[in-house]
Length: 124
Image (cartoon, rainbow, N blue to C red; front, side):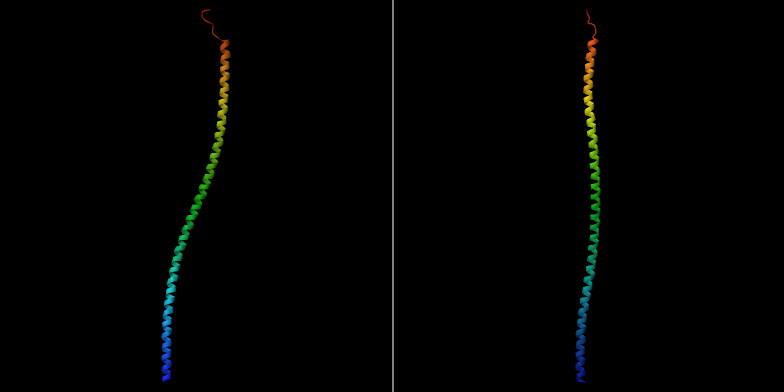
């Protein structure tokens, strides 16, 4: 009976050691599950932040694209208005030159007409 009791004591010691090992392993598994849960939560938070940043970047790119497009339109308008202004300045210069010529001709005409249509001198 004694060898059986020794074997039983040995089995009980082995079972106790296995229970302790099992408890330690279970604690390790629980710790790993908590870490995994925390890591997943952090990952979800990080993914949410990335999505927010991506949205901000997309909105900023769209605003930049819109601003660039408006800038190009303004450049076209400025160029067109500059061409119109240059054309108007050319017409104004031509009109001024024509006016000077007309004034000169009018002055010559007045002088010419004035000499032939002088009133008679009084007292003669």
